[in-house]
Length: 270
Length: 270
Image (cartoon, rainbow over all chains, first blue to last red; front, side):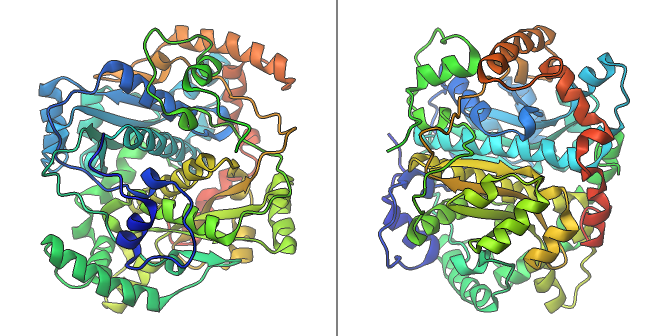
């Protein structure tokens, strides 16, 4: 059914560079995630897509506000336009299905206006956060369902590179924002999608209060360098040095202008 | 293994009020989510928690930045302090495990300072969004893994009610923020956790571009009113009227001050 169904213990090894000293609970599929950017021609039927969206709707949503929407884009011309706005990532065009996850306070705005009430609570960073989290929780459950059915996925954060143009293309009204895209398809034999190593658990998981674990960073820099060499991922410095570039305007691919776009949509203003 | 393992078709019925006219793909567990607020005394062993965190680490993360952390809080006194900061939600105290998901740009800040580079890119709403999405994707995969193992969960958005106090209690450094909490435990027999109805799919899932579906809202208001009556959920007006309250300062439980807190952490400033 899928190229990617390594048992949990093997997935753990690929992720953390060693097997654990305890028995891993059997959640094989959930440990097997990797981004897949090459797909077969196999379509994803509407019924399967509906099941995936239902999984997304099964995710928790803050106070049952359901402050997210999803837009499926099938039209090849529109896909090409979106790809052009997303650093020309070709999987946006080649995926069997492409979804855009929208942080959506527009429905609530309509309810509020219908009650004759002021809408400025929707301008808070709090409500922006509610909607972004709602969209992300729904998306990740869609992804878990898709992977359970043997599909591969790739998130497209580059949907935020040109937010004004994306909003125009998708007809996004006030109080909405395309948080990311999602490519879905059956993984191609040559998908070359390895499990990506991550920081050891004690680098991200702290007990009782926040911690800093410099050894975990050093260990990861070394392990990630090996992985990058194997996978022929070009590295200019270590993982931590590369990550530091994202704190620089040049590393943000134009996304430093996101606030201005969000404000124009009536989001995250205060 | 779990109280909650209805077949997909039955979960669909509970969610949308009717069965679909196509065969649902078998993703039973993923369609069966409901919030669980009452748990048995059964502990969650460290090995299981490690597997759950590993599932979270398997989730996609923007550019592999891994800009999230998780803090497990086991100490009963600290749990009680957190509950007091979260509208006294008792499941924060009674859950077998309690996790706090942190949007975490602190590690990247450290890498950046080590390179002698400016850190102001981390103050953008873009990087705030990256970290919040990273935390949410990880959390939802933790949840899917927990539910696959028969545990029940409840997200605690009220972690944002008193962000300054939460940050002090958890020792959260610059560029970090507790997005939400997560209660985990084996569901009690009397958990009374029904699948919550959601908007029909064509109310949240649009084709090619954004849409508005007023009929779906009306249909949902009616169906949700029935559910609320069955479940004895107090309703003051319809679901859409209730949702409109969240656009009002009084409905925000103090969270309208979130921006000020985030700015003090060096987040979402521009």
